[in-house]
View (cartoon, helix red, strand yellow):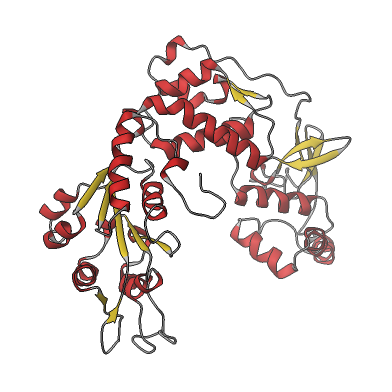
Length: 401
């Protein structure tokens, strides 16, 4: 957890396992120097936090900490993003741009997923480490860069060298001070404290009343191997806090973990307590009557309707799915697209575009157009009842889904 000044220190981290104490010991030594550091470990173990703490306890703590995910940069833009470019250096370079190395001047540059860096960029990185100079694309002369490099990887660097995907001389430059962060399954005694830390933070951020976790649930989490490491644990706690209806998390909030945890057969996962008021899923009146066009709605209060945000399995629905249901609901309760667009607070062209993107073109057009088509005998609107809803057009074989 970062302090108010935004600087992270080793004492801010939840690291109590013996294996992590060795990591912290090495990291403290690294913070006292400026040599390149290579942090190795699986995805989600907290490599970036270790890097931030090294910078936070170094002489560069008040200087920039610039993060670059090498695996997320398009290959054609790697050199421009890392080293910058001059105006006119290539097609589309309408302005001069400084790269990440210059952004980190005087501070720390954190290169995550360093093993994904293309070979062409590796040559420039090697020179930057050796000479403290970078070559912006299109520049006539090199630029001095004062930075401290911390890199991280979840790959086997030696294997990458053997495969020819990583320069051997660069590997030796990066591997001056290696730190391996063990996966969470090798430090399970940290799980309870991490759980309580995430629970308190997430409940506060989300405005939930959850204050604790039951012993049975905590034991369940401690048994699990956590292939996604600390990041997966944090996401599991987030989901449980958001979906919980009480002030204590139970094993029922972790069904997927219970199905895979070691010894989970010994743990009885009780069904969650019923909600104070049942949620009624109600089909809403929509045009054309195809099943795929019926929005998933819920009864809210006396006669109100809402859009489902969580499935019956407890999973959050996608924003696209909820947006499509909102449009279906508006179309079903309006007299044409113009009125639906007005109710939704968007322009008609925006509504038409969204309908095309979501595959809703089959809905009827403006009221006047429907009337004209009805007079011509091409748009009859018989209806079919589905539960409490009446859905027009379902007995037309030429328009039913």
